[in-house]
Length: 257
Length: 317
Image (cartoon, rainbow over all chains, first blue to last red; front, side, top):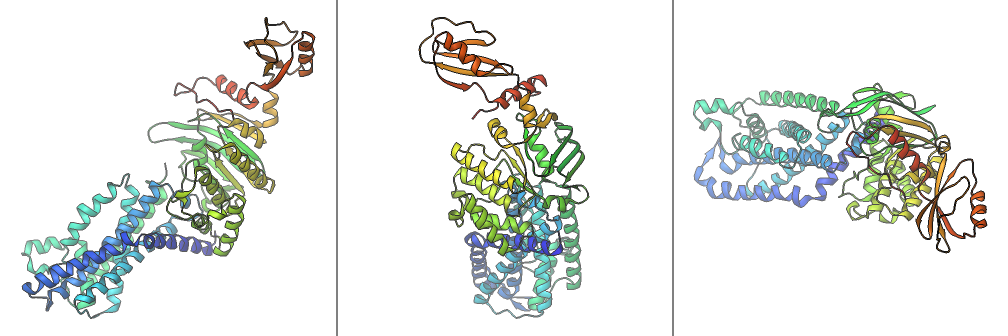
């Protein structure tokens, strides 16, 4: 098949993915907006003034980038894991497996679907944040790069989960027991400078810390870690996970008998 | 040219089940080919490997001369698959399902929409194009899978029990559609448990049992192997005693029903002549069983009992 035909197949997968999550916007787009509204009201408006400033900013401004990033992470992940496992469960993944599409095209299609949902939810949550506080853009380039790389990385994570999942329980284990704790401990609500030295070092092993801080740098211009290091970590992990997912798809793990 | 060429194809599942024991199979371009066998014989595994849904253990598969090991995408582009189980999203509309399928094969959207109208129209689904697939009846879902498989106009159409569970009227309309596609040059491979379906549609037949091909010939040659056919005779009046007939095996089912074995060297005219001479009036006459069904059962019996311990019974229509 020519590259143009691969492009048609890729666009078809992406369109199908975006149509899927937009069709069920009450389950995919609205809940993060409501959840984040509650976070801004409770942590920003009610508790925030009692905490005072953090990193030179009002507390609500400090947590806003972390909350936006948390929405991007969870939605990019959830989109791909639920869509891929749903396709396996209903067997309509076979539509793609029998078609003359290379696995890298299928992989890129799912990643773009996850990125699209992550970015759309990120924009919606940013608009919610702007109701509660002012946000300036310190670096559009860094902000855009971090959102893109983070949603790519977690789309790949969702796909990896979807490949190995055999039941609906399997697709909720990782978000519940791994993703949520790492996100909450990834500096969304606090600066790791507040932690004792030992826990500061432990926090550096949490990849979400790099994403939250790099994104916070893009918006506010402050970060607990080196932004260049964060971008390199994101790019390396994304590339590695892409290679792992592609190898698994090529071997037919979880999708072929 | 062979539309499909399978050599020494083997498949052993992870649980140790040997599904295919090195089968060889060829399907000529333009043929209407039946792949028959009892449940668990290896039909769906074979189709799964050809359509890249199942990883083979060994052997080679070529589609229109293209090796699936070295040119997988090119080989897959020739094939259209209608699987045994419903495998489209229950939340998408009929039109989205077929147009997306075309997109996966690199067909431009405008052409895909034209073909969608053509094939959904032929299969009586165009009026349902904006309905979600989960609202369709079972028969409509079957037709949708056939329409979907035709959207990229494959040279080789593989149908895995396409008429299972559909009513006779719909089944016959699907037969007409498949005959039309075959007449238009599409090679068709059909698996079915309805042996009359295979006998009516197919020109070549392979029977697979316990992972091996036990028969691979033309339908005409296979049916020619049948030496004796059994007919059921319904009589106008009750019969007091079974008459002796010269050259025909006659058996009494009840007092107004007889079964008679007619070998290939005797004619039905001779039978009726002898019955008339004895004053026996026949109201109606029918085949006891489908001819292919008789051969199928005989071939399986000759191949020994199934490893699972029981044969699945083929269904007469």
